Image 1 (cartoon, one colour):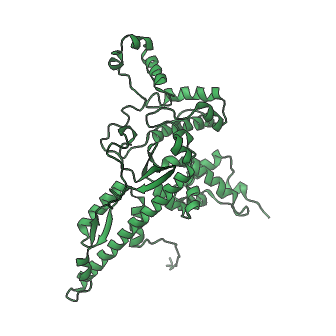
Image 2: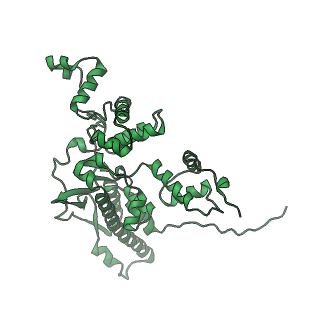
Image 3: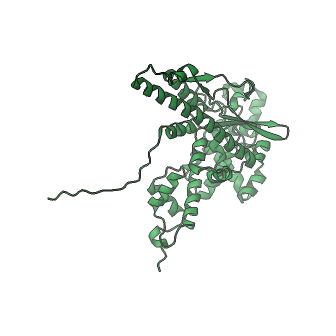
Amino acid sequence: MRQRLELRLQPKLILTQEMQISLEVLTANVMDLKEMVDRELLENPFLEELPPPVDAYYPEEDEPPWWERIPSKGKSLQEHLCEQVAVLPLDDRSKEVMRELARVVDNRGFLSVDLSELAKRLSVSLDELEALRKRFIELVEPEGCGCTDEREFLEFQCSRIGISIDSIREDPSLVVSVNLKPYPAWGWGEASVAYVEPDAFVVKVGEDYQVYINERYTPRLTINETYRSLLYSSDLDEETMEFLRSKMKRSIALAKAIEQRNRTLRRVVEVIVEFEREFLDKGPGYLKPLTLKDVSEKIDLHISTVSRVVNDKYVHTPQGTYPLKFFFEDKAFQVKKRIKELIASEDKKRPLSDAAIARLLKEEGFDIARRTVAKYREELGIPSSAKRRVRG
């Protein structure tokens, strides 16, 4: 047996303290950020919190209405419906139409777009769309989501429990006794007593829309001057000085990271406002889903940064409160689209393997396994890298 010494070079990303803080702050929603800063204030004597600016925007207490709020740590109604559509035993085309139906319901569960217009946009006949809508209403929970108005929802409920609308007209007390709901999403998510706090607000001012960051709960930090002066003292031992320097460094990094988070968040929401004017004016039926790439190119930021900004954050708009992810195409669609783009631009003599594609996607903020890439590639009808290789 012989011993052998080998020298291997392995690329390894080492995050500095400043980078770690920046990533943590960028990913945090407004309430998680406040909790993070509250902990830091207890442990770091250099930090002081300033009150919100006197001109900080915040809606009146009765705005937004309670039915437009989203249960904390839960999903939006639209996300909840889309997840159900994904597992229905239907063909891809039917799922695509139903996923769009899920996107265009409002927060009460009613369809928010004209069916003829939606059929045209989806390139399906009105009869086909109507048939799929009827199935959607019956298959998803809460039942009845996708109804066009209160009357259709009432008829749907009556048919489910075997009574007629005429019976209700004759005896209105039946509404209570048979537990009829005023709209499909009535009571949905009520198990959670806390509600999300919007990270940003989109407010109509005249004919334009203005973006405000939620400064009521976004901490504003400054440095305690008394402790800062200790850094210039000659009476302290080296160990104490090192402790103070590390806390001071962390304080500056955290304050800068919060400012950077808010600037980036504002830029992302401003792009959404620019692209989604029709949604803001008319409602969810006019949403034109973006991609992370659309936004990253518009504001010259890496896709992974945009992904972190979008994750787990909410915006209040004139149409209600929505997760930022609501304005983007669903993840599977985005990943498939990106796989096609990466393969289309690859070196045909050295095509990308599924593992290489997975690594590239991870760099862009998509945490996708190699086997998932292989599955999506096959669904797209794209052969393996060995079969795509051009020789010669």
